[in-house]
Amino acid sequence: MPPGGHENIEFRFPDTSDDDPDFDDPNSKILEAKRRRLGLTEREESPSEARVSTNSETESEPESESEPEPFIDLGELLDLARSSNPEQLPVLERPSDLESENPHTPTSIRNELPVRQTRQLNKRIDEAVVIDKEQNPKYWGGSWMKEYERGGQIKEQVEAAYGQEMKKKKEDTERKRREKQEREQILKEKKEKEKKKREEEEKQKQESQRREQLEQRRARARANDKPKDVLSMLREMLDDEKRTAGVQTRPELRGNQSIAEMQRLQIAIDAVKMWERKKERAREIERGKRGDI
Image (tube, rainbow, N blue to C red; front, side, top):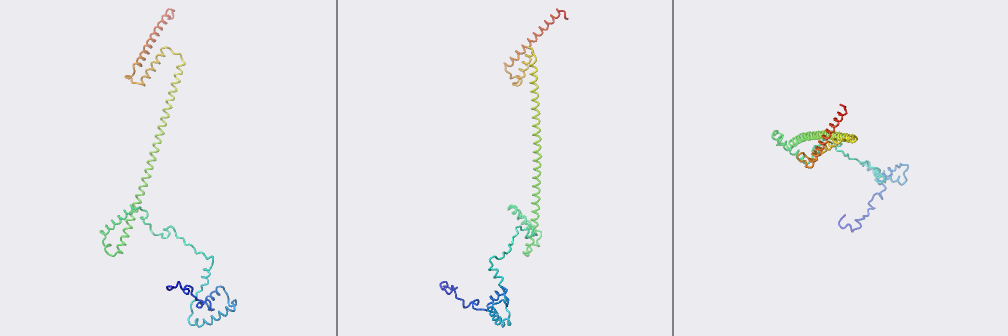
């Protein structure tokens, strides 16, 4: 559109009705395409269409004899474009797995390494290239294609060796982890056995003490049922005093009160023994007088 054409109505809406062959030219090829698309035969054509086709054939005979023009039938394409429910094209799904696209492409170890190990791998590759330049100078200093190919080979070798090293380290780490778990499990079982053993020993000890205390209570009960003489009572009191003083304090730290109490008990015991001896002698004299001896 020329400058200023927006204001001119002739440029915006040109009148091309006289130039359009679809309106005035009865020999249009679109009519022929439409007729063939509708499947009309010569017998089914209307008289006007028959005249149009006859005139078009007579006028187009010289042109067809001189040079045949290729004709493209756009009927099916137009029907497809005008259709309200066009046929849906199949949706191509992109495979999510990259290995399915390139099954033979080896996966680089760099995809599995963190940044620190990637830098370490690059450093090893650089060192390997420097060593190869010293040992095999024929591959270096010439064509860049040869250098690139040689560098690629070194890179693959270093990556493969690094991958084997990482795999071995991983296996060693896993093995050490399993060994540690086994040691911890064995130690745990050992501690549990020792704990059960201590609990069993403590239980047996408590049971033994309980039986001993029960026997002592029974012995005291039996002793209480029998009549006691004065000497037995004094001896029992003396034994209790000695036992209590021995448990509570050492002999050199016993108080004067405990010592005095034991002395009194000992004097009482001696007096009872003397009294019993005198009584026994008196009984013997009495029996001698009666003539029992």
